[in-house]
Length: 58
Ligand SMILES: [Zn+2]
Image (cartoon, rainbow, N blue to C red; front, side, top):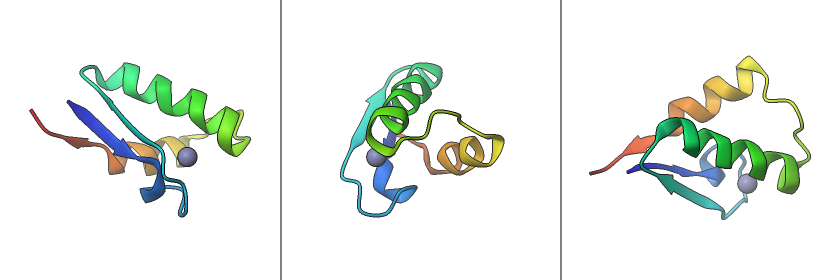
């Protein structure tokens, strides 16, 4: 499972995500970023920050 703790990118946020598919995980995170953080556009900088925090655990 690919896993991401939003708080690693957005300090103070307790949302956590996990998905078997990395792309679907990023989709969940993008939807959360828009609804919870008002980030409508995932810029390359944000994407890189998120991508670097994704952990994988079987
Ligand atoms: Zn969050």
